[in-house]
Image (cartoon, helix red, strand yellow):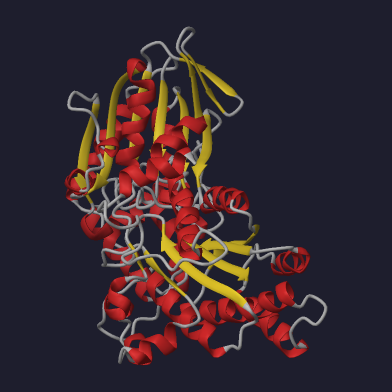
Length: 523
């Protein structure tokens, strides 16, 4: 509960209303309102991933001996600690790190999004800001998440710091989502513009994220283990906040402290596949030829400890613990929800139907056809870690309310000019799906929220819905289908019941993708 109270203090927008909701809560006869419980669990999900709690869990410093413990490794600190960082959440991470380890910190350099300090100050999040006399230098850049000259200056300053370290030093590297755009350092003679043009051409021709990362690493001084190599012989501890499904450390920020497993031949194969090898700038050909003849081969990273300190899985584990404390049978379905929001919404709608029947009539269950359809939908989504069978078995054995938890990043196919985000569109579509099924005598609520507090270009983190949404929208003269056709979910939720169903947290200073919560509570 301490985390929940901490988040309440940080996020409260006005004393006259609850943290996440814009209207009075719907109070149930059985006690705490379902909406209030959903809010509390979502708060714990975000609260556990705030920089302060994350670093306190990851780092342990003995003030007397100066021993820093990270996992099962110990490092001796004696004014030999240096810090670099890059990513959307790194400002708060650096502030928390300096608070914990400041007496040993010699110097730091971080690269963060343009405007992030002003945004945090405006939001009143002083704990996310460095102190006035901080030893950490801050560069802002990568506007709209695109590499630019300011981000390049930051990357070169980070490289310069790393290259000046000795075997007696320890480099603490802070990494979060968005770090790749904030750490652009092309290998000369390749220019930033040439590298950007090549990656844009590859993306336009259908290259996937793994292929793009392979090319980025091959042309970068710092990605693909380059930063770790620059820091050698210093010891390197990399603390990573993951916003990537599956938490692959070589993908997050293009793996600056992880040795690349790809060769020049892999790069040439990709360039051939998309018909770009012949059109390569001379500078790119020079860099690839130089790498191919490098007698040292790829970078080694034996002096590096990479630690995932925050992820969707860790956030959902905290949410599960909080839900269980409130009396729910809580099960994590998946931390890798991907695919089009239409398919994901259909899956959650049918899951509510099947799980509701399991909960209220475990012997009868739903029809074989509905069960089959649910598993077919799950197969279409191709989720690598989906625990659907186990979740339904847990629901059958539950003696009370159930909370099914999941996370990830679904995608929205833009077809209109409306305003919204993937969480609000998913919630709206799930609300429609829930209204189509004759649900059992249970209360149902679905919530989808972004842990960074900003869902698309809106001021909301997401939204929550109940099965009555569609009929209540009709009564208010709102055409749900029209709003969805224009990807205008934010406008819908602003108008629907006075904005009551929107989640408002403000910027949280963290990002571990999205959280999806499905509540089933027998009446």
